[in-house]
Length: 216
Image (cartoon, rainbow, N blue to C red):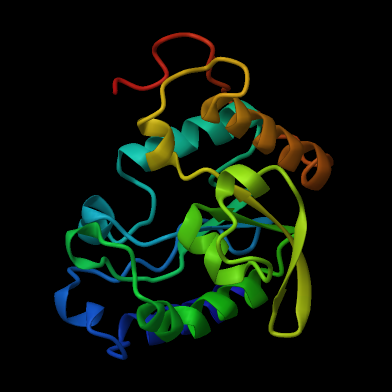
């Protein structure tokens, strides 16, 4: 059972003290999602304050916005996604995690991907992209988003796509053609149609065209 394997990885992660983040965390933030049903692994950057308090990734304002976009695309956060981060502990003041901190967590992230064996990986934000993309490390989300490319994890190749981090979308409210929010919808629709076309969920979709997407 995938859950049993993941519980072993989680137990080791919760005891990890290999980097200094273990000294300042409230809770390690391992993942959210059902490993038995998840078909896509979504990887963010690092836990924020709310995540550090709850031990669950993407539960703050950015996480709520991500859930709305996923629901609108017909992607179930509870059944289709396995959500985690490049590092499992919150960096002080929400700074970008260092290369050393990312390296210390890599074994847990790689194990998570291997256990899930997803149909696709979504790299949410610049830090996740940098951790996996084998091309020019200066490539930005804006330049590569919406494109499928291969990533290798433990000797296996997976299709991956970079998407905007929801915290970026919180600062960009426009829904004009070509805006980050419209592009995010477009990218998630592509994920749904190409990787989850055989899956149907009775999801209550949210109208993102109005002005009440999020009270931000």
